[in-house]
Amino acid sequence: MVRGSRSPISRFIRPIFIALVHMAFFSADDPDLPDNFREMFGPEQIDQQIRQAIQFCWMALPEGKKNIDELERQIRRMVDRAIRDMREDRDAFGLNQSDS
Image 1 (cartoon, rainbow, N blue to C red):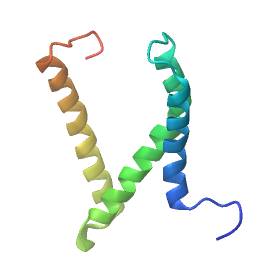
Image 2 (image 1 turned 60 degrees about the horizontal axis):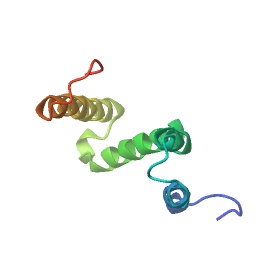
Image 3 (image 1 turned 180 degrees about the vertical axis):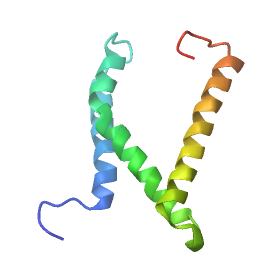
Image 4 (image 1 turned 90 degrees about the vertical axis):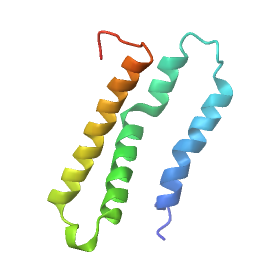
């Protein structure tokens, strides 16, 4: 491995390690806690998680269906289902808000 490059494992572990270190310094009763977490994770963390999910989906596709169109179809199907379930759960738990 080239010095300074990051292995796939370190790319996965590093954000978790950083989160744990930050959590050790965040107070649970800090009114800025949600903003601190949002700043710590940021869009980069979301992007990494999405890319990892896409890679896992690709690996799970059967050989005869490993193509970009099928990958996109499956990812969109799962995301649509997750959002639909989230809305249903908000209703079930009485958490209806203007954003649902």
